[in-house]
Length: 165
Image 1: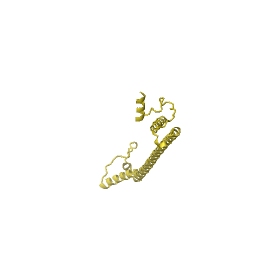
Image 2: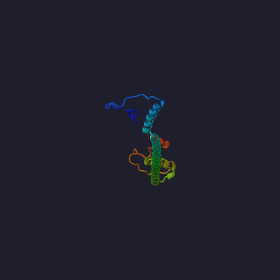
Image 3: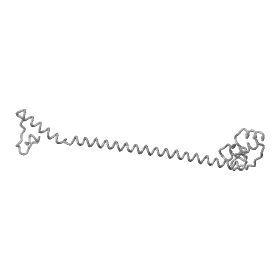
Image 4: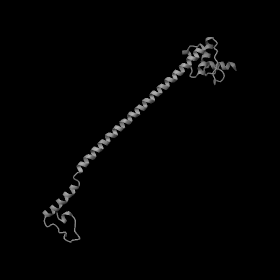
């Protein structure tokens, strides 16, 4: 291959000078040589392109797997929270049932008739029910109830407070 076909010039020796191609065949030969060199640079382009596409596909699959794992983790967290809420609700119901049973035993008023959430409310309601039934109930107000067990918010409790005034 000559220096002209290489596209290089030898300035030091002065041997190679540019001479234009004399025929169309020479020009075609020069162009074909240049195209071959250029194609050789990018000979593995299709292979690299296929590898890049495969890599992108693998990354997309991995991302999808990650998204699936994140969704599963979120679903598990939600399920744990639901179970915790159910347990807390059950514990609250059990605690209230224990209070109702305690007040019922202390006052003799049937548990199914008692209403209220705190011990003070339950005791106040037991006193009101006992008065309505014509019985006397000895209930010692629990601490923090304001002194009287009948300090509830019911209608009968309001009448009782009005009579005392």
